[in-house]
Length: 531
Image (cartoon, rainbow, N blue to C red):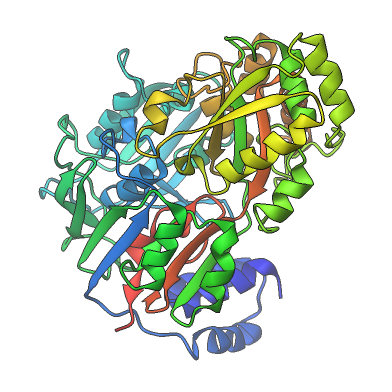
């Protein structure tokens, strides 16, 4: 049985995938009608019917004053998690990383993929009762694209040249250049749709999502209530969700084990064994392109010198970090953001390995041998980030690199340190296509360009690759971009890390997803409590 069919069967069993949708997907995958019956029996014989009611408490990495429910101002994974409870997108992303309908029922392009037409779902209303339509779609994307917008999504939504309402349930996107992958771009975490004209996100919002704001006080209180008029037939099931910030990863695990919270995101791999041994908790795991890294900024000293960057890249023992810090819940990276499990991964680039002699050669060439270099980290920048830096401190010594590690509080890291200090830890979720991560983090001028990478050839390849429908040609172009980042970029991939979350066993309906925690942030729709 293929992994894909096993995935569909598991989703059917957990109540995530409706029977009708299971039949459709299994048939499309080539399963015969005879085999389909036995698959459905084995997949649903022990399936439980989702129960309605109850309250979920979710432990997240931190509660910060800059937390936002404005899709253009999401700043952390906890913001993304809350946003997916409040908003729907035109396109969702299946566990196999393919685009699937949400507010858009279908889509098609012209021959060169420069124009896309989306048919919208009928009968959808916003939280205030207003009907959903093309005007809301256009307004939501313009919110990211305005001249004064600082939205990180502007980096890839800027390919939208024009949007048109064709009728009450149809919208057209005209692109600045062809993009065969445009639908999957619209599955981005910041692509939530809100009502035309809505501007004040300080206390509430007006989305079409499965939950509505009951109380939202950044840095303090986050409580959502179920949307009684939600259009979907597969959830939501619980009545209320509360999000609680617990900055210390160990404290977050203890809260789950003691029953103080029901779910937690971003499980530290070193505590995964505790979750697996416990009689009351489940480990939620998905192989992923998520990576934990060290961002070195090219626009300031000392990391503006590529000799320093190369010294650091040779000073890290990736195998040791994967084994000791991430407990083998992941795989080795090669200093660019595309994972070895990605079909666009360039396997021809030689794997960079720990080499203290080369590290010493380059740091000496930079004139900084045995001179102190500052590195900044925080628990909020990804599970294992700070322990990885502690290990890097030790392995770097053999290469003549003296690292001084600064541990920054979780509630201030993103505002006081990230994109401000020359070397600091970072963490990025896996993306379904390289275009998304390249546009968001490496395109010249992108607001989340944390390494200040600017390369005209890279930018040119980024735009050109979008229009190429031939997979091998596109892979060659993306491969060249990976090589450029590996040789001269400012990212050290400490490890690609599996998505690890945990739940109380009474919580059902969550399917681990390669794109992000708690079912690609969408647990709010599918989770239910077996009371």
